[in-house]
Amino acid sequence: MKTKREENRDDLKKRLVDAAEARIAAGGLSGLKARDVTADAGCALGALYNVVEDLDRLILLVNSRTLARLGAVLQAAVPEGATPKEVMAALAQAYVGFALENTRLWSALFRHRLPDGVEVPEWHRAEHGVLIEQIIAPLSLLRPDLDAQMLRQRAGTVFAAVHGVVQLALTGRFVGTPRAALRQEVAALVDAMTRGLQG
Amino acid sequence: MKTKREENRDDLKKRLVDAAEARIAAGGLSGLKARDVTADAGCALGALYNVVEDLDRLILLVNSRTLARLGAVLQAAVPEGATPKEVMAALAQAYVGFALENTRLWSALFRHRLPDGVEVPEWHRAEHGVLIEQIIAPLSLLRPDLDAQMLRQRAGTVFAAVHGVVQLALTGRFVGTPRAALRQEVAALVDAMTRGLQG
DNA sequence: TGTACATCAGTGAACGCGCGTTCACTGATGTAC
DNA sequence: TGTACATCAGTGAACGCGCGTTCACTGATGTAC
Image 1 (cartoon, rainbow over the protein chains, first blue to last red):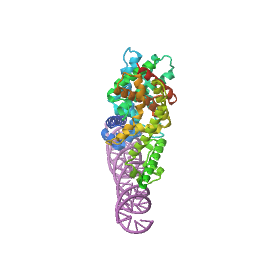
Image 2: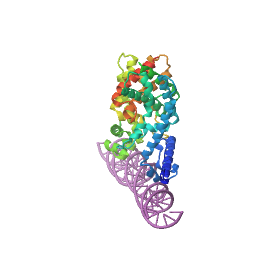
Image 3: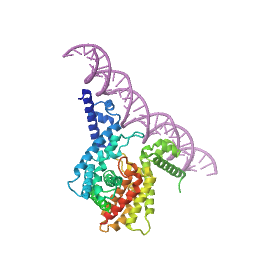
Image 4: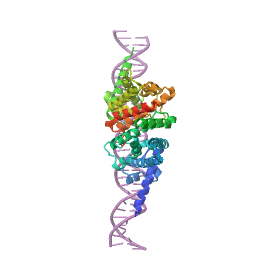
């Protein structure tokens, strides 16, 4: 059972992550300030550093949450008894939906960098698996000729292609798919990839 | 004919852009400091602000150069009398090559943001056209059914997909195509898109 | 249960640093006659 | 061509600000007896 100190600490940590998440969602990664977060969480500036090593680590915690939510969305998006092609299409649309609804948090997943020489902890690195895990099963049905390693590689490429279209549409400035056509264009892209990659 | 003042000014401006370009190429956008650039260019810190409004505008000038070089590379990559499919494949590989050889400068094209409320000048916006211009002609042959607007949109998507794969491979951290497989995977992607988009 | 001491979390003013930008001054270039 | 004045570019020390992080202090929670 938890001591009261642990309870308080966990509670504060949660409030800090909540606050950081809300701030990133509202103003992007660069809008995240220690003073704002601690004020929102209802604690003093210094308290942040009792609970978390760094502002950067706090961002890591927010990104973990975002990855978990995204993973759940992708998992829920896979339709029962669908063809591999349909699964791929559903995953891509779910990804687009998540990015549309959580643009800044989603964007933070790819924008955040630790300072030079600081390693990303392995547990966090592993969490990024959700981005491609769901792709592998349908892809392996479309491409039974590929071995496990090649499948993983191809899944990474398929993800990157879809991600690129979404990213330029949502956060790009001069080029890329117009936002209004995003779903349609992603559908066409996935259609092409699941056809082309099949042969 | 130019007055000596104009000559000096133009010369200093060129040295500053040279220096900024070298600094970005070596240390990325975030490694660009006014003091370094002016020291490299052989002038005082304040001189920068006689020649250019802002550090941000200096970056714009560097990006303009990069876009011009990239545009030339893409133009030169189109083979004589090739099929549309071959043209698309050649453009994509040329893009990969440019990104591999100029990773930080290329990356700066997409990372740099002006502060809130500052508009990108129209001349610079227009320069980004080189990213998709060459795609339109071969695409229009593959898809004669599409009108000009849809062609532009689809070209933006094709570019974004390839760009996404390159970007995650070169600057991503946890997911995306392994760098060693980049050319091969981009080739497969473009093959799929020029097949799939054809139907 | 109660008391005395130890530990550790919470506080927020102060520190420190990086760095873009300014500005009063000097010296070179241009102009008028 | 030469001289006197005006203009503007070059200089770099100083300004200013944002902001992450620390630290001496206070007060709450935990432990020993």
